[in-house]
Image 1 (cartoon, rainbow, N blue to C red):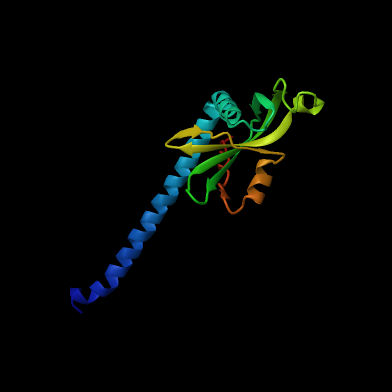
Image 2: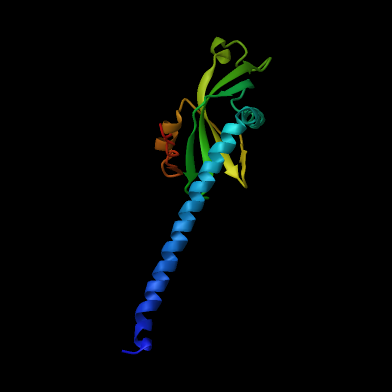
Amino acid sequence: MNGFELWPFLVPVAGLVLFLAAWWLYRLGREVQAERARESFRLQKERLEEVVLKAAAATGKPRGLRWVSCRFTDDFTLVRDKTTRRLAALIPVTVQFDPVPGGDMEGVPAAKEPRQATAVLHFRRGEWVSDGQTLFNLTPHDAIRLHARDYDPVPPEPRKTTAA
């Protein structure tokens, strides 16, 4: 058997090995990006509260109310947008409003009560950005369930164990 008879077998095997290596590197890159996004969020949490507040206030919604504060909880859920494949964070928030003077909500006592919502942030080019999207009366898990066609949950980071 000479060496030329092995080529028909080696070429597909080499192609398969290259494909598997590329797939592994792609998956590794996605995991690294997710970890980087999580760490970036943790480091910038207070600044991101202001970013969300300003972006949401600029939308003019809800009508007749002015955004006063938007406080994040310590937890957030990382998802991947199915269309763009970019990361997004779903953050449980408590939002406080004030009625706009002379507006429809001025005499409504419930207008000043804190409201629970989920803020949506997008991770673009290594930075968290907000377009002001806020999902009222939904937890992050409810948002994933209701928008299953839009979001894929990103598995949580593995717990790091320490040697005793």
